Length: 86
Image (cartoon, rainbow, N blue to C red; front, side):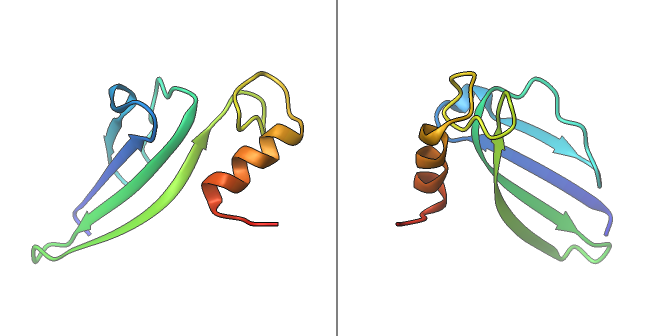
């Protein structure tokens, strides 16, 4: 692998999108919210591969509705984004 490109696309506001390079990049100034993350790798023969994941940038751990506390509403937001049904 000769390159790693990371695209972090904020689900609510594209002004918050971020890009990074490298195997283990540090991404600064993330805004709270959900990001669709795509990793694109390229080898020395020009072949590429991609993978995707969902990333949540929160305040307190588990604060998925970004209101400053962790409660039942956070579970509701988490389930909505991850497609979990009761």
